[in-house]
Length: 365
Image (cartoon, rainbow, N blue to C red; front, side, top):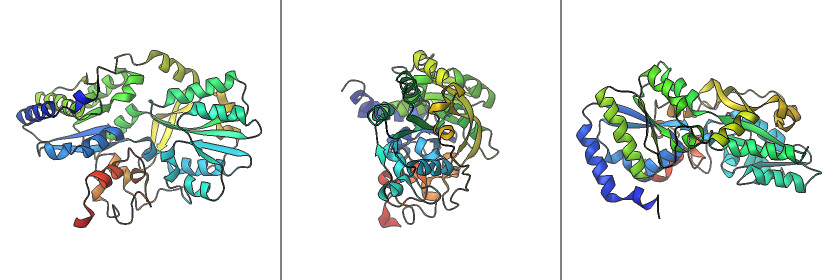
C-alpha cells in the first residue's frame, strides 16, 4: 500500500538503525509527543533496537490521558440531565472521574452514545428536536477543526439543542511547560505529524530557539520514527537546535490554512488544566462568546467541579518524561485496562496501555 508499506520496509529500518548507532556518541533523552507515536514505537519494539545511550520517554500527546478529572465529572453531570443525549468518542467512556466514569453512567441509564464524528451529533440534534445533544469535544489541534465545523453547521441550521463540552488542548504550550520544568530531562522532541498537518511548523521555531532543543516533526510508521530519531540525534551531536520536518509528505510549513481559519473563527485560546500536570497557560481551545449558545458549560450552568487527582496514578510524571509506565507500583496489578486507575491505561494512545499490551510480561511480575 502506497505511503504505508514502504515506511515499514525492514531494509530501511536496518539502514536507519545502523546510521543511528554510527552517529550516537553521548546519552540523549528524546520525547515523542504523540500517543500514536508511542504505540508505534512500543508495538514495533523500537526502543530495544536503539543504542543504550538513547532513552525514549513518552509525552502528554494523548488527549484522553490529559483530560482533567473535573472535565470527566462535568461530562457525567451533563449525561445525567433529563432529555439529554450525550455523545463521545469511545475512548472517553472508561476514563475515571472522581466518582464514576461515563461508562458507569451509561450502565445506570444515561443516554450516552459513541460516535466517530461531531457532525454525527449535529445530525442527532436535527433528528431529535425534543432532546438536548452534547458532544464531548476532546483532542489536540488535530480533531479541533471538525468540532469547530460542527458548531458552524449547527449555527447555520439554527439548532438550539446542540452544544459541545470543549476539552481541547494544544501541543506547543505543553512542550514549553515540560521544557520549563526544573526537573526537565528532555534533550530533543519528536513532534506530532498530524498536529502539524493542521497547524504547520511556525509555533515550534521560538520553542527550539528559546530552550536550545531540536524539534523534529515525524510520522507514525517505523521508518518515520527512526528517521526522526536520527535527525534529532544528529542535531544534538552537532550542538544545533532547529525545527525539521521528517513528515514532509503530509506536513506543509503553513499547515492547513482553511482549518486554521475555522479554528480562529470559533475558538479562543484559554488556560487549561491538564490531568496529572496542572494548569498550563493558554493551552486550550474554548468557544468564543459569539458561539456561547453552543457552549455546554454556559448553556447548562454546570456547577464548578474542582477535585484532586487520584494520588495512586503517576500519569503526570509519565507524561513529563520523568518516569515510565512500569515505574508505577500499580502497573499491571491494581491498574489494568479493564479497571484503570488513571487515563493512560485506558486510551488506545495511552503510554501505560502501550506498555501493557506490547512490552510487559506478567509472568515476570
